[in-house]
Image (cartoon, rainbow, N blue to C red; front, side, top):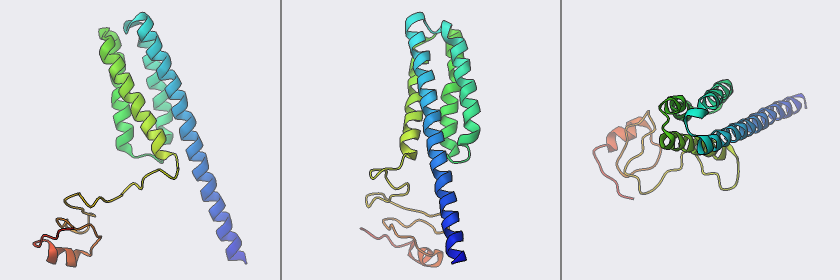
Amino acid sequence: MKRFLAAGGILLIIIGISIYTLVDMQQSIDRLTEHTAAVRQQVEKEGAATAQRQCEELMAEWNGMERRFLLYVRHDHLDNIMEHLSELPAYCLEDDRAELLSTLDAALRMMEHLKESITPSCRTPRPYKMSMRSTSFSIGWAPSIQGTHAILPASFAAKMSSTVLHC
């Protein structure tokens, strides 16, 4: 009975942490989206040069949130968003409205994609869904075999690496 209660307690802790991270991430991205929309409005009304301060504030807001995101989001996604946001002040200095809006939209799309990808739903695809049309699949510890999509032991994969299997 004690083990059952301990397992239940651990399960509740895991579920609580998962819900907290999900809600925190969604709220943070919503705040960033609102701030991005405000920057976009100012650029459309007054030009790129006037949005310098707001772009720097957006970057500072992202930097504050990024530390939390690093705990549960792939770093390459965060790096891509950071790269786009870091370009914004330079476009403000150059007064390049088109590039600023384009980069702002790209960063916004990445943030929205990030929000959608962490939100659980029946339609959320599995992260490592394998396609029968792909030409090879490698797991890291076994060499890839053309046309096979099974996770194979390294010894079997080494024997089959010269053979081409068609699905």
